[in-house]
Length: 349
Image 1 (cartoon, one colour):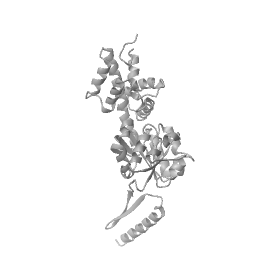
Image 2 (tube, rainbow, N blue to C red):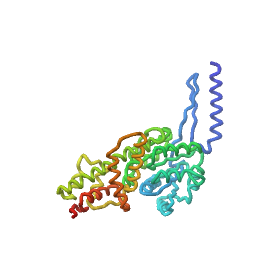
Image 3 (cartoon, helix red, strand yellow):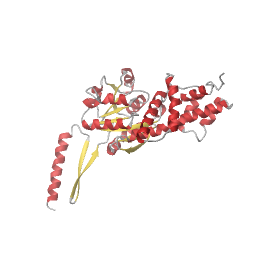
Image 4 (cartoon, rainbow, N blue to C red):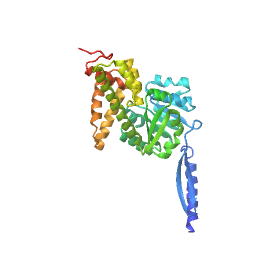
C-alpha cells in the first residue's frame, strides 16, 4: 500500500514532463485520475475550434468547394490547395487563403481535410517527400473525406501514425446541393475521441454524423450506402424505360414516380431533373463508376455475392464510357437507348 502514492507521484511527474515537451505541437491533454489505490491515464483529445485551429483543405471540386465555403462562412480560418490553382482562388472572396504547395498548406495548419477523387490521388497527396505528412506538424490531424477503398484509409492512418498525426476517414452521403446547404450525412472511422473532437467541423457541413469504428469503417459504410444509391438509380432507369415502352407519357411518368413512397429522397430530385433532360453533374457518373469498382473489389475481398450491383455497374459503365461529364442519373438515357426510346419518350426505329 505504501508504494501506491509513490507510483502516483511518479506518474504525475512524468505527465508534467510530457506536457512540457509536447505542449507546443500536440493539441492533447493528459489527465491523471486517482481512484484511491489505482493510478491510471486517461487520454483526452482537444476539441477543434474556430478560434484556435487553422484548417487546410485539399481538393476544391464538386464537393470540396461548397464544404470549404461553408467552413469559411462559419468562421474557420482555412487555406485551400488544388492542383488547379484557379479553383482554390475561388475561395478568396469568402476569406480563404491559397497555398501554392502541399508543404506550404500542411506546415501551417492544425487540421488538414481532403476531398479527392480516387485512392491514387489520396495517397499521392499524403505520401512522399512532397506530401502532406512530410511537412505536417506532429500532433496535427487529418480528416479525409474521400471515397476510397477501406484498406487505403487504414494505410493512410498507419502513415499518419508514423509522423505523429491522427487520421480519420469521414466519408459523405449527399450530392452538391446537400453540401451547399450543410445537409450531408457523415460516416466516421478512426479514433473515437478524435472523431468527437472534430464535431465543430461536422456540425457546419452535415445534418447527421455517425461514428462507425476503427479506421476503414467510414470508407466501408460509404460503399454500403453507395451500393443502394447505384442500384436504386439503375432500378429507376429500368422502370422509367419500361413505363415509356408500355405507352406512358414520359414527363407524367417521371413526375408521378418521383412522388411515390418507393423512390428515395436521393433519387426523387433526379427524376424532376430528368423531366428537363438535365443531367448536369451533381454526383458525376464517372465517380459512381469508380465507386462501383470499389464496392465490387471489397465484395470479392470479403466473399460477398452482389449480382444486382454487378448488373448496375455494367449499365453505369456503358453510359460513363460515352465520355460526357454527366450526373450518375444519366443511366436513364442508357436504358432508354437500349429500349429504342428517345429522351422525350418517342420510340426509335
